[in-house]
Image: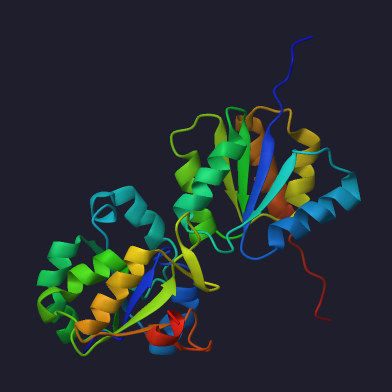
Amino acid sequence: MSDVELTKGILLSHGGLAEGMVDAVRKIAGLEDGVLVAMSNDGQNPQGLADKVDVLAGSQPVVVFTDLGSGSCALTAQLTCRNHGSRAVVFGMNLPMLLEFVFHRGLPLTQLVPRLLEKGKDGVKAAGPG
Amino acid sequence: MPAVLYRIDERLIHGQVVMGWGPQLAVKHYVVVDDELALSLWEQDLYRLGLPETVSAEFLNVEDARARLSDFEDDDRKTMVLTRTISAMRGLAESDGLRGRSVNLGGLYHEAGRTERAPYVFLGQSEEKDLLSLAAEGVEVFARDLPGSRRIDLKDLLA
């Protein structure tokens, strides 16, 4: 049986959003150390944050999740993932997407990322008014 | 119409600028002055992603921007000029380029060798000297990250 290289998740957000989301995933699904790592852009410029993400990511496959599709977190994510075949960025993270990540991070990125997008979008629903 | 704000912010075009200062000042055009960024079209595109459709941006090196300062002042569109560094802003201020103008310090973050002067302003010794030089050239320097937050004048920032 071949070893599957598991993907690491790095969450980049404004304020404490990333930390809160990791905490929520931990409470719902349990979480081993290092599977999802939260980072905030508080007090950081994009390059400084990108350097830290680079160190955390190392050489293993990584999905960098961001809160928004533009702005300093998104820019940082793109700086660190550009020209890296084993890194992907997913913008607009939400809880359904992160839970999907935790349970399917053994998949290759080419299969994992579309699943994350699908779960993330499917997770946005409404009830009412009326 | 004179440029509405000259701002030093390591994050350049980001949420505080686009959603904070931009609507407050009705900014329609951003001029980003940075020698490295002026050469990187893909990074310029990344910054443009954060802009509303009705707002434009251009990216210039310091020398070109200095030559066009009067264009920014005469532009009908409300324009914000952004630099990543104090030295780039000093480059614009050469030869009285910014005399009588205000420069806003909006975000200079923690790095080795810098001291915290405000939660969003960390400065090294040479940077503090550069700011004092800017002030000596007739530029009013103040720190304020968002329009509604407390303004900190340079003398209080460096006290």
